[in-house]
Image (cartoon, rainbow, N blue to C red; front, side, top):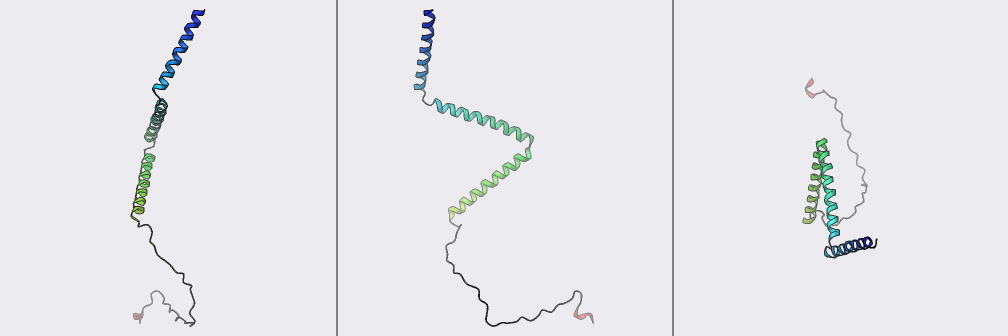
Length: 121
């Protein structure tokens, strides 16, 4: 019984020492695990996207066109902001509207009927 206990103790010691050595030898193991999780999510997302595109190609085309238009608008706005043509510096002055003192009447408009002509006599 003591021999079995000593073998299991040795196995535990060996496993813990290998784990410690591996942890010290590869400090970026967490980064690798994180990158693997990201790649797995990307693969699953690509599979779902492919299935949606196969079932609804019109929606996929509309989505791509909308994304392209948004990209183009953002690029165009960035270029305009870069060139400085977006705003114009200037000054303004408020002018209050005033009525004129002389009340001038306009002549009344003459109304013509449809179809009447001067040469109808």
